Amino acid sequence: MIIRERLNSIYKSDSRRNKFLLVILFSGLAYGFYRGVQDNYLAQIIQISKFERGIVEFFRELPGLFLVFILAAMYRFSESKVFKIGTAIMLLGTLGLLLIGTSKAVVILFMVIFSTGEHITMPIKSSMSLDMAKQGKGGASLGLMSSISNGGNIIGFLVVTVIFAVLGKMGIPDDSIVGFKTVFFIATLLLVCSAIIALAIKDQGKPVKRSKIYFSKKFSKYYMLEIFYGARKQIFLTFAPYVLILFYGADTSLVALLLAICAGFGMLLAPVIGKLIDRLGYKFIMVTDTLLLMVVCFFYGYAHRLFSPDVAFIVVCVNFVLDSIISMASMASKVYVQDIAATQEEMTATITTGISVNHLISVMVALLGGYIWQQVGIEMLFTLSGILGLINTLFALTIKTPMREVVVKEAEARA
Image (cartoon, rainbow, N blue to C red; front, top):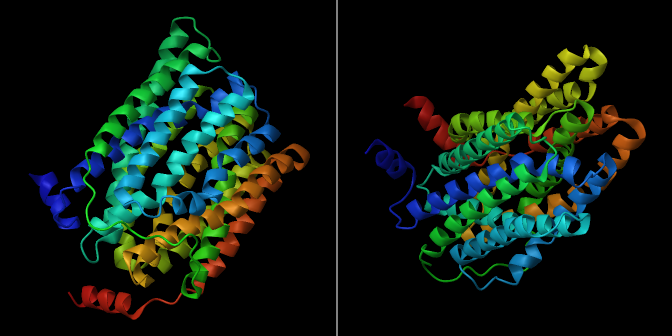
């Protein structure tokens, strides 16, 4: 009853809501298993070097770069139908990793397939969540969706930790293929469930007509925010786990446990951050978010220079978690788009284009990042990340708060 009242306070009366949130949960579970082993699988089984990790990420992020064109091919479909297609493609990716061999080309291919499905659902699930939300509850809606997804991630990460711990006690080494294939099998089963539930979501209303590519002057600051925030975040997503594995010797259980801690904080704090966006405004959250992340970048890159190896490892682990927590505030940019978009169609097209725009620089950063690490070390790599965060902050400061947001905040203050 309490859960239903909570959902009803955030969402409009919509028959799709419960099924949609279930898909988010099962997809979150599957992603927890997949992401929990991804970097150790690449490092220990596929033998991907730090430079090659950037190359892998270049290909893995290409679907994001071409997302606007991928969705253009489906522009006559409703958002729920596109959501179903994206979920099915993710399933194909984990199925390939489960059944096919371990050659570098094949593994990268199926990781790209999984990434394609993930990127297709990325703007759609945000748009669907915002569309189902009541007026003024956009941040809370995105926060709850993120919380549910993180809840699934937590379970997935923790089970990965347990699987590899148990295998270790059984005498099966961490770099054995057995543990990784077990995880891919579970992730595949979860995505089968997710796809079945997604198919049960009824298409409602007319198909959303998406622009093949959508640029508008009023969204120019959003596009710039996506470029620099995306580039900074790409460095962390690609190389932060690899620093733990190659530089500090973290095994699969530890990496998965850290990811579980990140997701745990995400589940607890995402709704809070969503409410803060609604209450304090997206501009304040954007600026605060990026300033804090600059500090995180500094310690991640220079901890080994400032502390003993054991202390540095702890500092890096703490900052790994902090980056995940602070980065949840990136949902503020989507609320910003919702606030200035005239229609749902314009909002979806803008978010989709924004993802492609940030991937344009992200794929280059992935290639450049591996080269920088190999040539001059992790210090310069994370210094670059901090500089990108600073530029992002400067752009966020130029955003003008719409009058209606000011009115809402003044009304809340009087209340």
